[in-house]
Amino acid sequence: MLINKSKILITGSSGKLGKACKKIMPQAQFSTRNEIDLQNLNSIKKYFKKNKVETIIHLAAITSIPFCEENKKKAYDINVNGTRNLIKEALNAEVKHFIYVSTACVFPGNNDNIMEDEDSIPYPKHFYGLTKLLAEEIVKSFNSDKMKTTVIRTNFTSMPWEYPKAFTDRYGTYLFAQGVAKGLKDVVIFKPNNPIIHICGSRKISMYEYAKAGGSDVLPINLSEYNGPPLTQNMCLTSKYWKLYKLEDSDYNDE
Ligand SMILES: NC(=O)c1ccc[n+]([C@@H]2O[C@H](COP(=O)([O-])OP(=O)(O)OC[C@H]3O[C@@H](n4cnc5c(N)ncnc54)[C@H](OP(=O)(O)O)[C@@H]3O)[C@@H](O)[C@H]2O)c1
Image 1 (tube, rainbow, N blue to C red):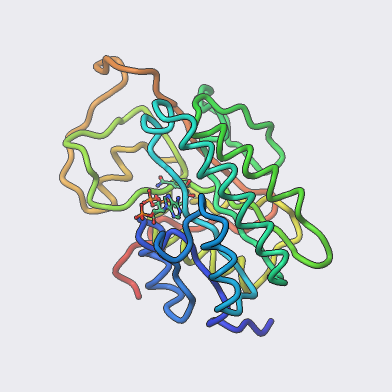
Image 2: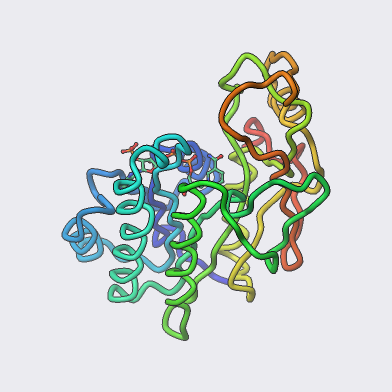
């Protein structure tokens, strides 16, 4: 399918995934918070007045779990109301495909053996996960013949690993940010039918293995040595409706 790459808008351009998307989709439009502030409806209207957009990949959000817990109003205003502001104006601006990037954190991550697919029932453990789930529902409610919507759930972080240690008994089907960006490009091109798509790796690995695979020099730790707020144990996603990606193919040196 023919896509006009210069009519793709990616929000949250200064973030980890935004930077990776710049490498994979360099011709797209990338908005900063100065251009589109999700809390400022006028900035959104102004952007669409100035720029023709056909596809949006909405990344901008408050992503820190502790920050969301401590600043619930702000997190709600940006992640939930901000997404509503953006999608309403996208529809007015005749955007054809709205892609919303959500997270594996809509699931509780308690069960060691589970692989959550697109039909699994979400049940977030924290306020960040709740804001992302609420925004998912808003996005899905806008799906129509005029504007297609796709919710993406994924799990990644940027490398190098930001801590000295990584857990050997916390798991995910992680990708690197650039691998997620490649998956998003596939979604732009191939427009999945299912309203929710998981972009995830094909292999269940521990955080320790993930950090090592990202070239980080970390030490192992396990949950029995940890003393702090409750943590998720297993954030493995799988997909019924999309291909699974190989972590090895998603590193950041291949473009
Ligand atoms: N990182 C992960 O592990 C992970 C995993 C799964 C899904 N996700 C999802 O993927 C998306 C991107 O994550 P990320 O890790 O790249 O995020 P990030 O590094 O925390 O970056 C967040 C981006 O959102 C922007 N932003 C925040 N508040 C804004 C506002 N009011 N108006 C406009 N822009 C605003 C930030 O701009 P400033 O630089 O101006 O603050 C920044 O560009 C998020 O939706 C997140 O929920 C992340």
